[in-house]
Length: 271
Image (cartoon, rainbow, N blue to C red; front, top):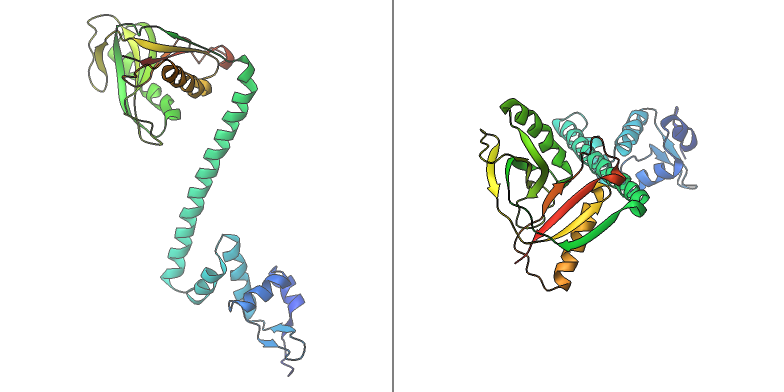
């Protein structure tokens, strides 16, 4: 090998750039960071001081998630708008991944809590009519079923603003024809006196009596899905014809009731 002043041996270059010798060889093999000189007899790699900046940029791009092909392209485009756009796009990807990971963590926490409370949960199934009543409701599209609280947060102040007198229980109705992963058409409601009227965004109407299969859940709201499953299985086993979506009636106030003592009725309309 011909001596070149100031060349840096691969071990020292690795220490200076915080890239392992293995990765330096990998980047060389892929044409991303090619040594200034390679000893033809031993294959030993040497790097020029001017390559330190390249190596540090390679490490930064790797650390934010770019693959080897993209790193090679971005090294060549570092002083262009392409480089900036690539960083912006990668940032959006990471933000989306963070949101998805946080959602999965939330689901895991709910599953752990549901498992902890599983032994305190009870579900009973019977045929019981959904009683006729006059309700005042607020209906809107929410991100998912778990976001029903967003509607209640808007509903209660509006009720107070309009001076609506609540006379009974409350609940929720999912108006979509089938199950949806997102953008759920949901209405929250409270029972009011006959003849009660309201103005937008609220609506007032009479719900008729309906023949229903009812599940009574004693336990946390996270278990409503299990109660719905049991209702569907019971309807199928008894050869009942389902005529509408689930209606939920909340018998306890979640703000002052422990999860294991919360009571919910789920009504499945049947022919």
